[in-house]
Image 1 (spheres, helix red, strand yellow):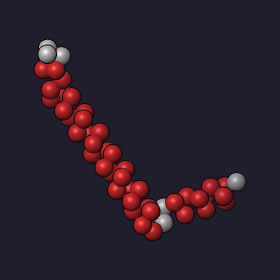
Image 2: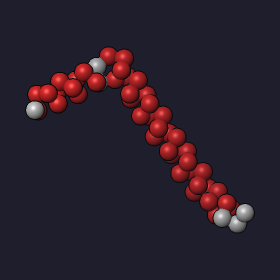
Image 3: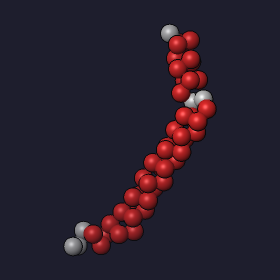
Length: 49
C-alpha cells in the first residue's frame, strides 16, 4: 500500500503536471490572501452599507 501511494505521488508531481499543480496552488493562495486583505481593510465599511 505504501509503495502504491509513493508511486502515485511521484507520478502526480512529475513533469509539467507537477509544475501546473504548484502554479494553481500558488494562485489559490494568492487569491485567498487577497480576499482576506480586502475583508480586513474594508470589512468595517461593508458592515455599515
